[in-house]
Image 1 (cartoon, rainbow over the protein chains, first blue to last red):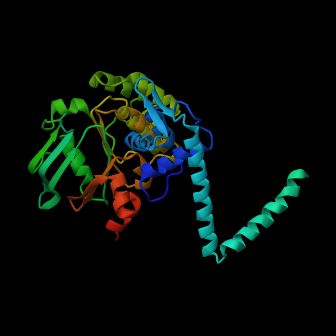
Image 2 (image 1 turned 45 degrees about the horizontal axis):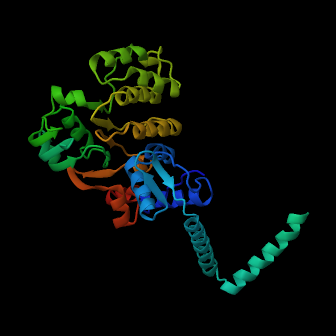
Image 3 (image 1 turned 135 degrees about the vertical axis):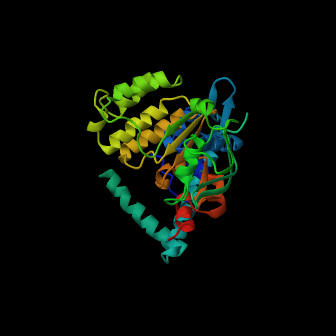
Length: 127
Length: 232
């Protein structure tokens, strides 16, 4: 997944979000060692100090921990990762509902459309 | 550790024209700093003062605690806004030249970058395109292990793919001791690799802040802020 950092929000926050996506999508798995600050910074084309700040934030949230001698690792607390995944799903869905509201759809209307669409998809899957 | 650059009440006049006035600026080590401002605002004058090519009209400028001179030239790697290299020389001759001139020049690194950018080191400078000439100069400058890199418009004529490689090189070269000062108009391209920005307007420092602080405070990117501050 490419690092897309184009919004006007602070860069380190965008990096935090992207790193969370990498964890949730399974690119970085529980207990994995993550690349060095320098490698990640080069990959994302950002300043190493900014990447450092993003990783420090992940550490503060206990998603990442530092082993003094061997580097940084993704937390081994799988429940926590599950919670984060669920939280993200909720956030994405809320954002989507807000967007639909702006388009003039009430929540129940959106849900109806959603059900309709996913119902249609089922037969396609079994073709 | 001492600051890599300190300017106190620095001013530079050309005759009656005031190029810089009352500049107070401190840069720490280990930062990548963007020096931004419209044409003719004094960016190149400041960089030339740092490199001892100009003398201050008043005030003081120190690089790692020293007034620009022989000692500071050892630790400052400078990419000027126009080339001073001889057209008839081959690229590999420049590498030899720099290796003899600067004890911190890493010739292996220079050749490595040359091959990554697909440049033939046997070519003479005058046979190269504008963009390739810029790349060669940048290789020379970035292959030194300096404490302060002063890059005056380093990526203007370079294609986007090479631009990415060059920015990548700047990031990889970064070390705790070294500071990179980049003057450019291509803010969007370099914004993400900067720690700090310095805005210069009519010879004065208008703003000196960290990139993310600006984004938090103003809710906009440096590029957007620049367009707002310097709207014509």
